[in-house]
Amino acid sequence: MPHSLASSLNEHRIRMAAVDGREDSLSNRCGHSDADAQTQGTFITVIPVDYSRRTPYPTTTTDYLVDQYSEYLRERARDEYLRGDYNINSDPQYEDAGPMYALAQRYAAEPLASYNTMTQEREWDPRSLAQQVANQVVPQAPSVQQQQVHPDAQTINEQLVAKLQQQCQQQQQQQLANDKAIPPPKKTIQMAVFLFSPVVLSMEAPRQIMASELTALVMQEEQLGLPRNASDVFSIWMTSGLLEIQLKPNHKPLEVRQNWQYLLSRFSDASESRKERDEPRIALQRNVFLSRVEEERIKEQKVLELLYEEAKYNVLEGRYPCEVSHYIMLGGLQARIELGPYDPHHHTPEFFRQQHGDFLPAHVRKAAGWAWLPVSSKRSPEVRLLEAFKSVPAATPVKRLIRKYLEFCWALPFYGSAFFNGQIEQPVRGLTSLITHQDIPVLVAVNEKGVYVIDEIQCTILLGLKYEELSWEYARPSQEDSPDCLPCLFIQFMVVENGARVSKILQVFSKQAIMMDALISTYVDRLKQRASEEAEKGTFDAATDTDELHAPLRTPVRREITPQSCLSNKLSRLTLATFDDDGRCIGQMGSWSFSH
Image (cartoon, rainbow, N blue to C red; front, side, top):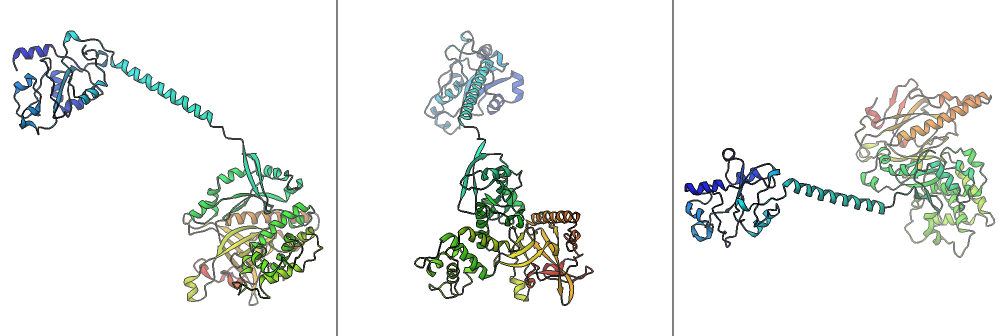
């Protein structure tokens, strides 16, 4: 390069500040090293642009500082650079030279506050860089005399920050407007309380209402016509197909509903998909702590009608096991209460054949061997139901029939029980049963009298014991993290076997075993308290020693088995362990063979 031209370029060198923080990357892309930057000062040189092949470069003046770019343009002559002939398409040998680099003004990298060297012909705007690249225009070389002052970068940044703050304020104002448009959560909620009768109460109640308050609110419903003292007879329950819980007076039904999935994870061994589909509902049901003596004293007809509806439900669901003849008798009473007097033109065997699902449990309907035939035999359930219906006197008032129905249910030992789901081992008999046997699903009924294990499929009692006849113990699973290892409830009782007194132990597996244990403990404590009060009054019966109400396992209570015992004769269907009077295990079945 001639010396005069180099001097002129050095004198008219224009300083340029960094744009968009890309000093290092642009410099590196143009082939400048840090050493060059230190030798010549911190400079930013070029910006890569891929120009169209059809667009020539504009001619430039000698005010551009030309560097050595021969490594990008291969062997192009230096004179062509000085002439400003930048059209690579002028020579076919350069058609494949690759992307070109446009030479921009070189400015010294000074602090942003000194960013003041621009041309009069084209005012500098940070956004103009992208526009220049898009339009493929190289800015004309300015002279030192034509420079004008431009607002510094700090002012631009302040403007951008102010704009962003304004946008944030607008968004916040919009959010506040949206929040105001959304009404705040109501302090009350619409609740549906289910009864066993075809009545569902829909009421507006506070969100934080407690079970006792909700019960009082239900008692105030004029349509039910219940007296205020009925709040001692009924209680609020949360029930579903997997779990039934009587709420304590201070429990909040809405909170229990919100935590239902957690309760299922603790007290149900159903599959996850089944738990997700489970929908509980608030129900008004009989208070499980209402004694049978108190219930028999009730005279209010509206209260008795609700108790009848609940007892009818338990009968039809098979929760109250009875003989088939008893089910037929109860079905006849129900038909007379709900259908009115017998009408021979309407109440025919065909009518009860189509409607017998409303009056008889499922296992009774299926018991008939020829139930699939379109004709009815003399011993078919519908014919027997019709006969029981006809035998009810037409002049008997309905309220008398309702009480008659309840009186029969009151005589059942498991009436008024709380029901829990569980399973027990099935005895293994032979090689085939060893391979195919499964646990028996059972219902464990617990009431003020005792504990009853009911076969859920065949609807029959497997074991029934009064509290004076049993000992019990709750056991946690040995592997609590394993879904196949369940908690259990041990039930111990005395029997006479082969002329010798021995004790038997039944193991009931259930996630609800801890709930069974809690309810049994509550009943036993009440029995002890009542026995203590009777002892103070001098009416204590030595046969109900309180020490015998909860004897520890392996020290069985020495009591005679009376004919009035609730113990049924189905021990052969249970997997039991047998112990002698000294507590030695003398008989093992099922998993007992592996536990000592």
